Length: 250
Image (cartoon, rainbow, N blue to C red; front, side, top):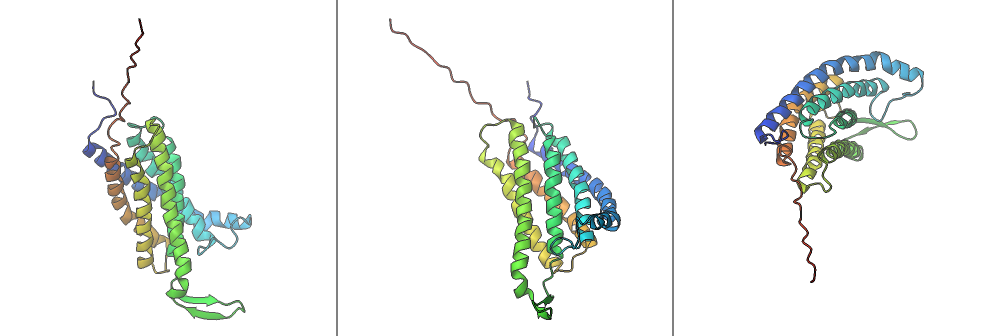
C-alpha cells in the first residue's frame, strides 16, 4: 500500500510555489489595507499612549507601525497557504502559521529599516551642528541593520525548521534538513545587498511593496527546491527492527 504522504518531487515543487504565490497575493491585498490603517490611524493611537513616541531606528512611528501591520497579514496568509501543502507531510503543521507570521513580520521590519537607512546626507554633531557625511561614515550603521535583516532570515529558518523537524517525528534531524536554515539566511543576505543597492537610503513603503512583490516568485522557487532537496516529499524512513536472538546453554 502506498503511503499517503508520498509525493513526487515535481508535485511538491509546484504545489509549494502555487501556495506561496496565492498566499502572497491575498496577503499583499490585506496587508496594503492594514499598512494604510497603521500609518494613518494606529500610529496616532500608539503615540497618544506613548508606546511609539519617536519611532524605531531609522523609521518613524507611522512607518514602523504601517510595515508591522502589513507584514503581519502577509505572514499569516503565506503561512496559511503553505500549511495547506505541509499538512500532508507533518503531524503538527499548524505551528507553521505562527512561525511564519512572526518571522516574516521581523523580516519586513528589518528590510524596511535598512531601506530607510541613509547612505549620504547630514548628521548632527554633539554640539548641535550639522556636518556632511558620506557612505564611509554610515558603514557601521548599514552593516548593523544588514545583520539584523540576515538574523531575521536566520530566525525565520530556525522557527520553520523546528516545525518541520518536530512534525516529522524524527529523533535526529537529517543533515539535509539544515538546508532550510541556510537557504533562508542566504536569501536574507541577498535581500540586504539588493536593498542597499536599490534604495540607497531613500526607502518608501510603496517601493518596499514593489520590491517584495518581485522577490516573492524568487523566494517561492528557491524554497520549493530546498524542500525537494530535503526529501520532504518522501516519508521518513523508519528504523529497521533489530531481532534479538537469545541462546541458552544446555
